[in-house]
Length: 265
Image (cartoon, rainbow, N blue to C red; front, side, top):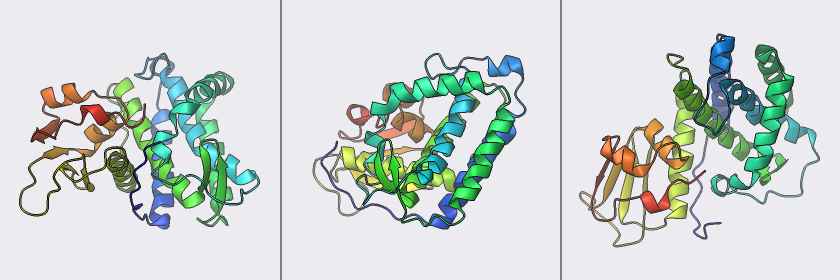
């Protein structure tokens, strides 16, 4: 776990809850249009098909309801900025669970409907301070819902990459929260103030050891758009390719972030 400690950004809990529902709804609307041929298409996630990816999205949301069903831990042990670095350990379990769910659920829209209904019910009287016994560690509900925006935005992008012309929209609040959390995680993994990373219009962070910039134009600047940043942070896009394809602007001797990416794999 990265040793650096960074003050956690605050998120509006009402907007985050709305963003989770909005992005899940966007995905549901798209999934119900998919043909059997499209559901059988490969994805960039190993040997998962689109069907397995679509099923996995419901798992990422259902885990909120399932954790609210469990006994509440005494206290939270995992902070929001710890979460991106704690997810890799669960990759095998997630893969197995996804395959079983995709095989068992023949009606994906019914699965999405049940998942949404459960979430509405469980969140109705659950305060953001409620501690959840998540598989990655005990977290507050408010923090865990922010992580769901990452899951939803990242997998929306995976679906769009897998199905030509699908073009599932990204809810603005969900995209903003996902971008900011992953940008802040970079500042945790590569602490310092020599490089400014800009992901307009959502995030600007200082990172990387070296002389700290105080005024004027920073000597080391990285700038990119939100989806490119998210792909870099999650291992969907390699740094060298992003720079080569002009998806990233990087200037200065400390502007190469390849040693710090991806943050989540």
